[in-house]
Image (cartoon, rainbow, N blue to C red):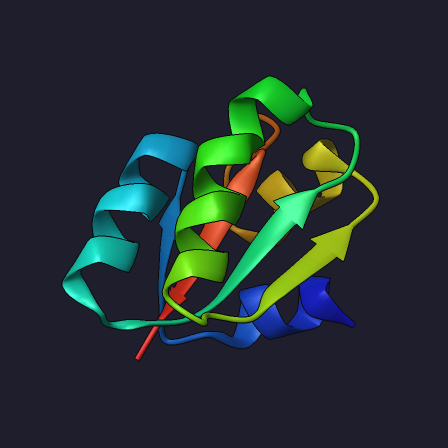
Length: 82
């Protein structure tokens, strides 16, 4: 479900650091986290999203998440922008 949402989104931001920055701007509709990513890597994104009341979705694979973003490497976190 969330893979399709990411693939169909008009604007996305890929990566944990960039997602945290985007969350602070207030333009993020939803954050998608890969469950097979290291929790130490995704913790800041999840915490920022929860603090700002932004929904967090989880998907099972970094590789599939990266592919749905149109990149050839895995993605731990993706922010869907308004």
